[in-house]
Image (cartoon, rainbow, N blue to C red; front, side, top):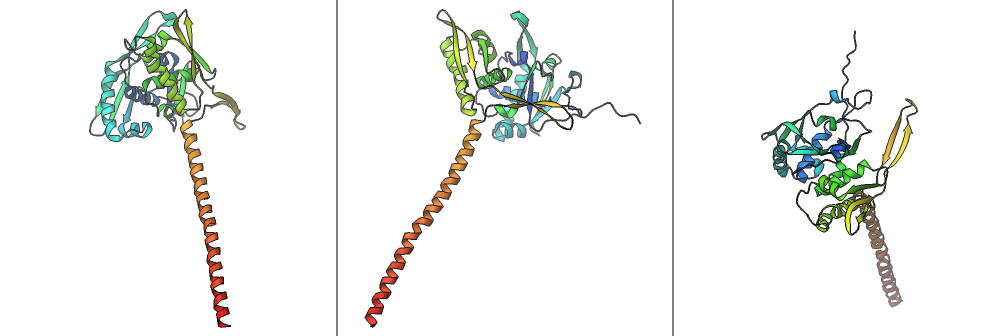
Length: 315
């Protein structure tokens, strides 16, 4: 009997975002932070490997995907009641807004629509979308030209600028630095005509983003301004690089890369607080026990004194 050539798709337990580097540097126009989170969650549903462990080829990647309010609520820690409104607004944005991808050698932009179809199901609380043919090449899984990260890594961020800067860092995670002109940053952050003064642009976008990333991750993120005369023309970001170790499976002989990223600050703090709380509880228990000893000794002393007096009186 002839074996079927169709291979089943194996999905990752943790949602992962696959994006081309060009899409990673694109201008997402009027997307709000929650719109962008919805887009990323839908993108994470595209990824997967076949039974042989190979990334799906472009012709095998599905264009239609759904996202429930419950899924969004769980990953981004948003109340379920608010998620319905978020998904409904995101459907409108995904259909109306096109993204701008810069052409090679800074020769203008391509404007690409994200979805050709989007539906909001009120009764069951989910959205369904169909990505356009034009955007699919930028969502295919080719590791040499694409970035990959776990969606939960950006779940704690409260700003679109923070999420976008974190994504840029993933592109250069093994180098420990990245350089962007101020104009490139304006396009990536999609500020449009806002923050015309560089000082305002700096304060409300990447300064805040650096603070929020450092609050969440032990990344040591900082930046250096590059000037031409007195004008700042570019910004160079420095951060702890991701350590890459190659591990070979002794049975199969297959070598894979293991990526060790900067630690999650909040998770580390929670563990430390838990240990500290446990230590304090033990210490309080010991103190309570120790404090009983003098009191017990005192009672024994009083009883002994009382008995001695009672005995002497009988004599």
